[in-house]
Length: 296
Length: 287
Image (cartoon, each protein chain N blue to C red):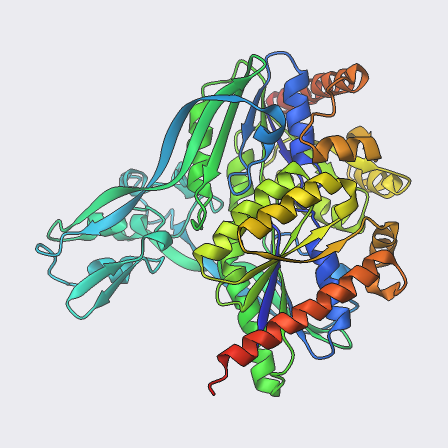
């Protein structure tokens, strides 16, 4: 199964908009929303939830006040300032267990914490793996890994190995993004012609390179600053990165968003035309990967 | 006074609000806590005068002392240590620097050594203080960089500091807004913006910090946001209209208040209103 992750570095460049449209264009596919902190893809896909499950993604200490002698050993070993007045602040505790090991009264236990839930839904034409992280929870990278695992195992279980897994990623370059792109066949970076779009693109390209993943770029709202679009294209060229498309600023994108449908549902819109071209190239990229992987 | 700017959704205008606010208010400093993708410097163009490495402490095993008893690897909750036959291997990117392994090692074979994961840069723009954290590419953990950044400002209570926080709703955002006096939630009038504004509001409520909303790229659809806020008794403090001129200024790295004294006045008024709301919240708590 081929996996393609859509990322951007900078937020709000159009990852989800593009992802929902690619999903609509693909015939056989599985889609995973790996922006588990602020997922939005479900707003553009009509879905029916098939199953949902709690996810335990971190641990947290608990102090049994009836056993605690308030000796203060836990305060000494905790590096996260997570213990105050002999109570554990669950937002600060990272579940390392140091306090548990050193409590002479054995009053402290670390236990698994539910950090979110995972869902499998069907959208009519696709299987949709998604999740929701609890507010402020630790271990969002682990939840992303679980969402991807669910997506792949659905394909394996149903024998549906033909279509790609399309991954909607999150902004940034930290643990969540690393978990979203690791092991993917390619990443598609959605950039925009702004100083921050360009700066953040450079960082996420470096990240893809760090993990040895082939990267492709498309530029959204390319006409809001054509000079910057050209700067980004020549930057990509200098890095040996292919720019596989430009999407013009199109009011239909917002109109589609407000209706909760992918913009390719307006097939004559400028954005839809551009996205169909990008999809053509993406299919080629994923096919190429297949041919290079098949032994002769 | 510390003001945190957050949004949930990325790209709604956190940096626009934070940078223009810090630039407009006399003596206000700007702190970029979005260490994965810091962008404020592109608009404020500070002169950086000081750089400081951010280190994470990670275990280093003295193999001649190590008896491969397995205590460290079985205690580590983050899989940062693994025992393979008679040797302990370390995976420092997974390490949370809790120090448990070195405390547990019966023969003192584990020493904690610093490993660079990012950098903190300090400088100034137009006489205002500027600070930013930058996570090294390939490093998964942003929180230690944010925490060190926050340590450098902890005694800086007299002035106004505007913190530009990361998107999302995870531990990084919590680390960003901690100890703030007020939170500004920046949203845009789209279903995505509203969906993620709800998440950001929940986050701020969890942290019990008073907050208000700024609607960026405001248009006819902003009423839904305003109704949502009114129902939750969260004030809408400012609306920045959608404008092609603003979009092109932003794309070129210009501040919106540049050559726009009227907008600058509105940012100053925003600051006064936040001060009033924060004071009100404090006196309410005391009472």
